[in-house]
Image (cartoon, rainbow, N blue to C red; front, side):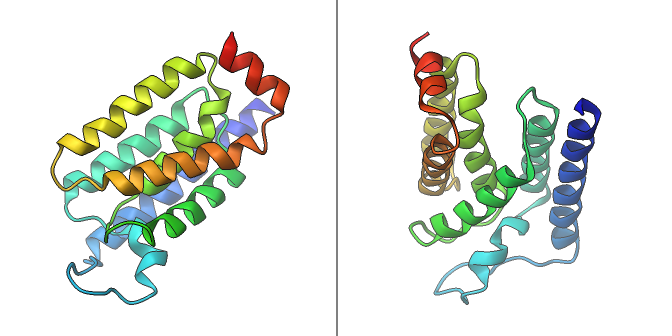
Length: 165
């Protein structure tokens, strides 16, 4: 069973990495300024502004795939739809960070030290206020939505025990 979970994690990482790399290499970048076509909110996650942006996002996905957290298909699908919904409340953006922050919000309930986890995430979110060209609003919305959605999948008792222990 554990081997299947590791294999699924690796497949998710490889699929996301290949999709993001191909869109970058094919030159599929979203154009800034003005209103984007409706379909841009469905594909912005796969577009990156430069190779460093692409590598940073792939590194984050790779770290999640290697982590102790159980990342399943449900998490990936939910985080994709969260990132689509969040872009309507944010400025134009590109990159996988919406999906990554939604995943981080959902996976927070698996953390043994949930308060410490949230403090670290608060630090990463605040870093987005300092760094240029970082979509803080999108990161915050995706993290919060992932946190709330996963809250409905985590039993109340387990949440209370983790948070107050």
